[in-house]
Length: 93
Image 1: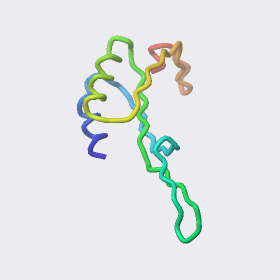
Image 2: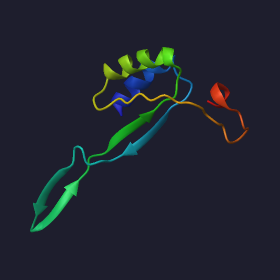
Image 3: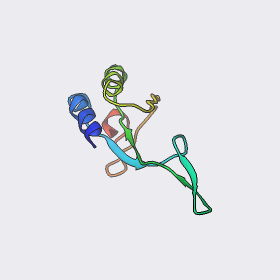
């Protein structure tokens, strides 16, 4: 969690919201056998999702990259809708 705290401290001025999810996947799985039984262990990892404007995206990527390892994926978001009040676009974020 120290890495997450360092990331959040570095980008807190650039973002309004963030979603952090604990995930596991097979890219770094550990397999083996114990007493004749095979097992696969998927170490826990954190998935961080941030929606921001294109201007801040490059700076956010740079800050996260300098404090973490793993993968960073950047995607275009064409629209957003806040279900609670029906706001769309930037207002929906």
